[in-house]
Amino acid sequence: MTFGKCVWDGCTRHAEKESTGACRTHHLQLRDARCTGCQGPLRDRLELDRKRCARCAAVRAA
Image (cartoon, rainbow, N blue to C red):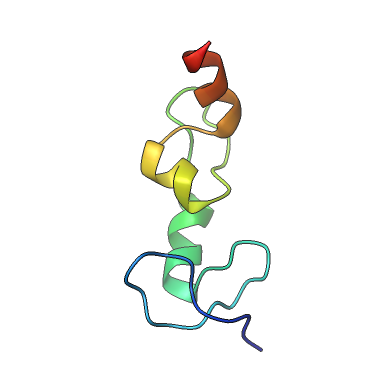
C-alpha cells in the first residue's frame, strides 16, 4: 500500500508510511536520525534538515 508521492524534494518514489509521507529509503533515514540537542527521534523532513527536533528548535529560537 502506498500513500501518494514521497515528501522529499526531488524524490519520485511513492510514500510507504502515512505518518511520515516518505518512501522506504527516506523513512529509514528518519528512523535512525536523532536530535543533536536532546538525542530524541526526529519526526519529519524539516527536523532532519535542521538536525534538531521541533522542541529544541523552538527553545533555540526563543
